[in-house]
Image (cartoon, rainbow, N blue to C red; front, side, top):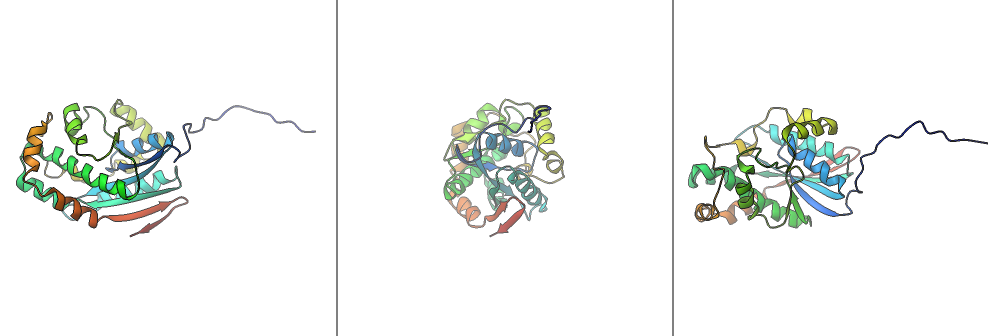
Length: 240
């Protein structure tokens, strides 16, 4: 008495259900790359939470606002997420005052990895995730990424590592994050950046620079002052 007709197929997202492969903490910069990295890991079944490092009040709150908007947008693909907003200005002040100028960006990133590892442990995230693409900026040379990863307390997933910028932009447009990502802001890693940052950092030089920094105090200060936003979809958030 009835018949079903098929006029074609509409591709779905593909991949695996979010959460079945584990939990990761993504370093969400507010730029184009990291939201794409988040979505790619969600498609592989990873529940993704977010950590954003900001330099407010040394700069405006624009990067915080972008991170919150991007995290809320990405939450529609996994129903629930946590965004941690980490004040990074105090750590930057100490690094700028005491460390060699060319090593600033690498030192920023190593401290971020340490803080992110502490926060990941608090939420039982097994891995960190970044939007790094090999050779794209000074901190993403092979040597610098190796030195930076040594400071992380857990594995780092880099789903965009072999993609070029045009490929990443195309995926960001499709994902719906591109227009938010290109809004003007000042990323904390761009603050006090030297004219000629080190692109081939050596482990011994980094160890010498970090020996005069109070890393434990930096990390404790940042973790204790972290603001937590819990998102769910349909859109709802709670801040603590």
